[in-house]
Length: 184
Image 1 (cartoon, one colour):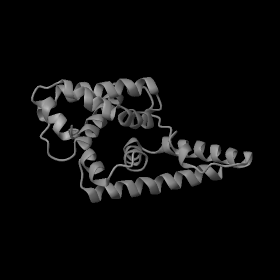
Image 2 (image 1 turned 90 degrees about the horizontal axis):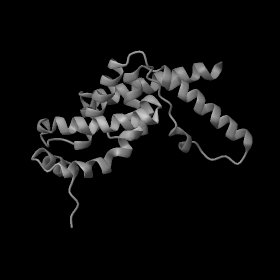
Image 3 (image 1 turned 180 degrees about the horizontal axis):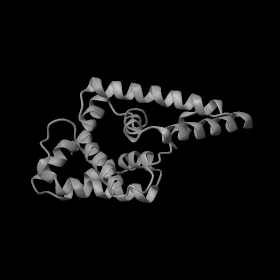
Image 4 (image 1 turned 30 degrees about the vertical axis):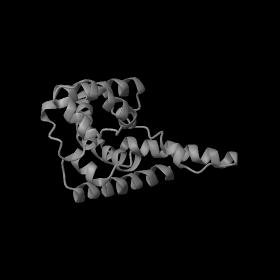
């Protein structure tokens, strides 16, 4: 039996086959959780926001056209859920820890190197926290979630070239902040 694409599943959801939403949830819950966790560093909140995304997908299923990538449409919804949450809860900080960076650093046999790696991660986490949420978001999508710039552009509602420029500028600012923090 051939597996249905995300777009085909969502079109079935749109036409009333709501069981297919469960398949989409199973396919994408970890990826969405990672996105939210990288934006807010709170596992419980991230789980709630993933649920909110699928509730909103269900509520606005009639707006899905099937054109473009379902993943980009879903992440645009996730982005809106994230903004709505922080708009309603302005008193909470939107802090992002980049815990996924740890596995990207090379394994080290020496204790000194491990300590240095942990320090680098702490500095990188702090630098990410100091970035504006929009810049942090584009880096999470393009670098940590390794999404294509065409998908990032759809999520951000801009051209692919603009998404690349935003990612470049955010990375440049992150590098600058990181180097300033490292000197301290």
